[in-house]
Image (tube, rainbow, N blue to C red):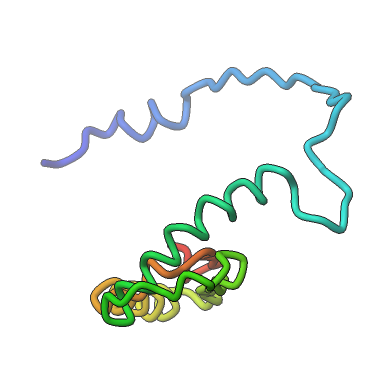
Length: 118
């Protein structure tokens, strides 16, 4: 359907009202520490149980020996680097394969940047 000649004119003549407000934060979200936060430690405690179960399933359904401490469960991280469309396709393929092979539930951390995070 052809555009009317007045459509671009209406678009260009549209007035945008914006208000700029200054906000001063008195308590920043930045936490200076060499240790993990309490929330992160709580997450790791909950995730460790699930990763241990997932590893048992992945490794053939055999339960881990009772003497294996949950603190010994590995932290598996999957990282994707940037690079645009190719990185997106490649990282999507990696995630799909990890899911199909049953490895993805064993992952504790997933991170990506730029193209691989699209």
